[in-house]
Length: 474
Image (cartoon, rainbow, N blue to C red):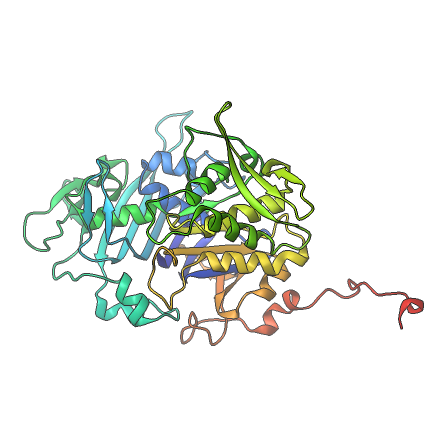
């Protein structure tokens, strides 16, 4: 669970600090750079697996495509001045994970702070681009006694915090940075604390974060941090992927674009390994019942059928009239809603989910059902995480007034462009995320927003209302 994100010098995020709870909605006009927050989270996730070069190539570029010049990632990256990106996260990591060889690993502590600084090395010669460099990397624990100051969102200390913030550590960092005559060194410290010699890794020769190189259970807490960051994903459900057929040999986990919808639902409905799981018919009934929240969608039941001849899964919806439709015949908005309904019933689907404009393709009358669904995907912080309360976190962004009106003010962050002082001393406009006045996110002296600042979201534009002709009234 990502509880805090600090960004400096990444794209238009000059200096942004964000506290997250189980559910967050970032609202603002198009073109504000809201998606860059998702890019930063996605970038960190890539850095936990890929090299610096590959991670920079995978992040959405300034022109909306993947790949390109790494200077796209920096604030004012094409001007000749020192370029630096600083990222820091506070996160709750899984207590138990598996390493790349399938061996179990148990984290010493589960509440951690990870800090990373990246620089830029100029290209050598013509016809090439420069590359990212690792300047600093730190991983430290947050003591359980300090957890209330960091977990500021409303939650149950007894049920939630005590079940996810675990372990103690008397030693120092798990990863630390040291400047030597030979260059910058990232020290890897064992879970035993001060006992044992740290393992130095040369930052200049690394070509990747040191955290991404931990693949075995020799360093279980670093591995748990890596697994947590790898679970951060951007959910971008595409109709073509949702409609694609699933073969028997395909993965049975929903991908970020929505592929393997039928195979995923079949696995959830028929998985005997999940304790206290409802039976097959009950799973289909729960998904169908939630899909029925959409007005205009008539659902009697859902079922995934196996075609033994073609070896494919097919998801069928039967309407109340008796008409049976394959999932590929459903509308785009219905398919996206159906995919989220399936995820809601999947206890293995955990981690952080970022969603861009979930209202796309949804009729305005169905916005309440969609907003409630994405909220329900997030963990309930009044209870302990479990198979019936999966440890999921949801962040969405939107420019739609209807979504803003349906969100609790404490769950909102208002995106604005405001004057900020850049590192070279000049004043420029940069993205600012404002919390609601009086909410748990607001701190003393911090700029906040009130209802007056979001009037455009709370009232229909003048002249937009439909009126019945006078002769039809009465």
